[in-house]
Image (tube, rainbow, N blue to C red; front, top):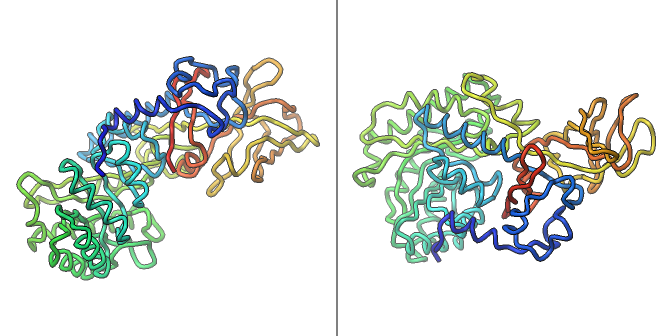
Length: 433
């Protein structure tokens, strides 16, 4: 069934959800309140009854990051479909759309279903979709909502055959828009490996009535031994493929006023995407240059802090890390060791361990830098902390930690306090993983 509410209506509805034991760290005395009512109380994260560990999202940093990517995309003539897998949060999707996003990118059918349930009208699925059940759902969504815009990858003739078979069986009325995915090189992830392979996939699409070729796409983050030169070389292959397809008349199924979709751009190389997409030659119709970066919304204190393109183009702006995980010291067995009550169930650890940044004293609430304090490991529910000689830390103190990799930070929390710099909680960000 097609989505019946807008993204804005979805956010309003989320405020009516009741707070209870499902949501980690929320104040026990808030049980039974709606999320909206709790947010209206504007409690303080440190004195308002929250339990540890608790993940906080900086309101100021999120807002700055949203504004920065909107400005960047506009400056470079890019449309923007941020990857929703990062947060899986309808509230953040709504904010991204308010900041000019064209739509939201998904990776798997479940994510697309979440998007539709929360009013997202444009979805780019950055994968080939060959699941017959998911295609039946998609056909129903397209049939039931003429305003629903959807596109996905195709990268094989067999995939096209499976899509066509499933869509015909589902009684699809509207064709599914597809883009041929160009692989990022031998040994990379998905995508047709050569231009000849891409042409064969496009021929297969043209032979169906259930699919419509609308462009080309890929993911430069999988270029082997990626460097600025190698990434740009691959992006130029992608641009050339779009031009060759256009010259061969492969986009004739597009209606008047529709654009040729050319898409790339994760969170590590969008500067290269902007540069090369500026070189797209004049085509038979305008190009929709679609960027798909997702991690920017929260940024991080590890992986993307090192990889962000803004390190290479600082004049374009700076993303701000928005996550801080607060955990309490529950054991101080030796002068060199301490343990906090946050572990793998609470913090991302697949790329980097959390980074101890500040300590909040349990005695007087004062906050100081976490000098000489390092997170050295994680158990399921404990963080291992190494302390240097002279490091001030005692049982009861709270340690504020920066996290690496937003995609595996959001997914551990269903309701995340959105916190202003003074500790005031202004909202709660709901996630659906």
